Each structure stands twice: as structure tokens, then as C-alpha cells.
Length: 362
Image (cartoon, rainbow, N blue to C red; front, side, top):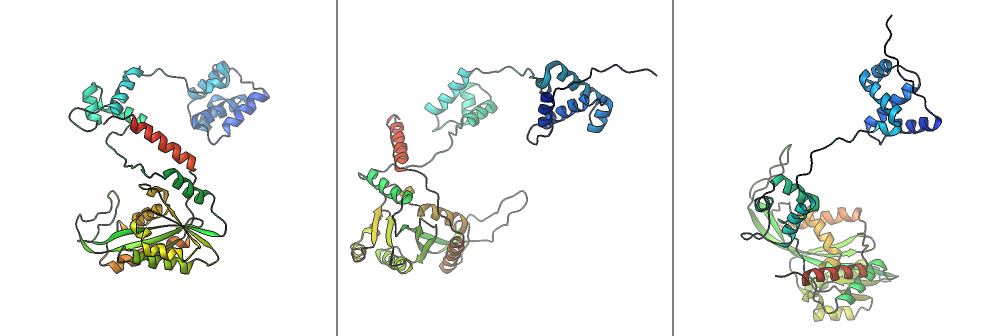
């Protein structure tokens, strides 16, 4: 009978065998590389190319290819060869020119660059400009709002409040307190269109206003639990009533540190008099234009997103019930917010922002 072309046997040392076994048993390496290592191991066992190909579901040519590659190049031969690709159309200098143009200038007839306007300005294709913008995180169409505090005691207040977060005092409770005012009970003029496959939930653009409520909230920094009350108005009388609610729910053996903003209600003479008669209370005022340092603002964002913004309420009582239900469910599984920023890191960031602003021409 005619005999086929003789194949060169594959002989492996113990070290080579262990390397190939490690690859063949790997669950994280590419499937192709794992299969090639198994082919070489089977070849070393003396199995024919035809038998290996039939068992692994590949062609005889494939088995022969990786046998030869391993014999010629060793383990490196099992990796894919680098294929010559299309040469770069644009040099690094051209890329830098486009990025710097987007960062440092504006088009003569608009407030910001777009992919299309940049492509027209530079003569580069829109897809290439889009790819470069994505690569460097350039988003000329977007803005992020900010406001630097002008509080003369900004540094002292930041150190004070951050100190309460990172090193809370013993035998005391730290509460972040604020009000979310003018929460509107909005009722959509038509029923919502439920979400389905291929389309999002639909709501009418118009609504009927049924009144407002103000949500008073106190976030316990240590546990994440929230004391909350809804009230019709937003005056010092309502704030005093909420303070009495806090007083009734916090054990008398604990001091209470309140973190509040500079709203006039919090500094009303009657509020100050009430606090003065209760020495266990300690007020800590946030810097002006720095509500981000009050953790309860983050909780207001959660309740707005999950319970208020997308709701439809026929009256204020229904809105209030929804808020109270959310608070009860939230407290049942509450956990504290993870505050990790130190006062030094915050002040360093503010310093960097100031340097950027001072170097910007308007």
C-alpha cells in the first residue's frame, strides 16, 4: 500500500510538556492557543495528524501547520503571526493638532466644535474625528456645572465637616440635615405607555399641578438611616418642628452634631434660642455654594431618581405616601455612604480648579 509523507516526530522535554499542559488546561487564554497546545501534546503522544484532526474537528492541514510551527519556533510558534496592516493615514502631529483645536478654540459661528464642523474645518473624515474624540474623551457638546465657594472660612468648614465624617466623635450622632422644598405633585394628562421590547417608557409632555410639599430629612452618617417628614411649608416653624422630631428619636444620652447649609431658616433667632437651651446640639454649617459636602444631598438624589421624578400623583397626599414608603423601604436596608475624601484632597482639587480658571481667558 502507498504510504504518506513521513512526519517529523515531536519530542518534548518535561519542561516543554508542563508549559503546554498549562496552556491546554487554561480557561482564560484564547481558545485558538489552547487548541494548538493540545495539538502539539497529541502529536508528542505519537497520534497521527488525521486522528487528531478528526477528534478536534479541524483539518489535517491545520494539525500539520501547528506541528511544523512548534518544531521550527517552539512555544512562540503557536501564537498568531503579526500581519501587516494598513499604514497610518495621519501622523501623531495631525492628531495632536485636531485635539488641541477642540480643546483650545471655538468655531467662528458656534459655541463649540462638533464632529462634523471639526471634520469640515480640518478636511479629515467624520468617522476619524469621532474616533479620535472617543479615544481622548473629548466631548465638546457637553457641559458640567460647578460653583466655587467664596466662603472666607471655607478651609476651616471643610476640615470640620470632613473630620466628622472620617473621625466621628464618641457618644454622639452625626446627622446631615436639609430640606428638599417645592416637590410638586404632578399628574400626567394621559396614562403612561409601558416599556416594551425595543422602546422605552412613554409619558406625556404635559401635566397638571396638584400642589407641593417640602421634605425634611436627617441622614445618620454612621448607619445611613434617614429621619424624614413632609411638611406643607418651608419656614423656621417647620424646621423647629423637625428638630423636635429629631430630638424625640435620638437617645438623650447622645450628643447631636447637625450638618446644615446656610439657609436663613437654619439661623433664625427662634431656632438659635431652641438650640441654646439644649447643649447636646452642635451646629456645623457647610461653606457657601458647597452643598456637595452634605451627604443628605446624595440621598435626595436617590429619592428623586427612584420615587419622585417619574411618578404621577393625583394629589399631595399620594406624593407624601410615596415618599414615606420609599423612606421605610430605604431604612430597612440602609447602609452608610462611603466617604473617603480627606480635607487635604478636597483642598488640593479646589486649588487645581482655581489654577485652571485663572489661566482661562473669557
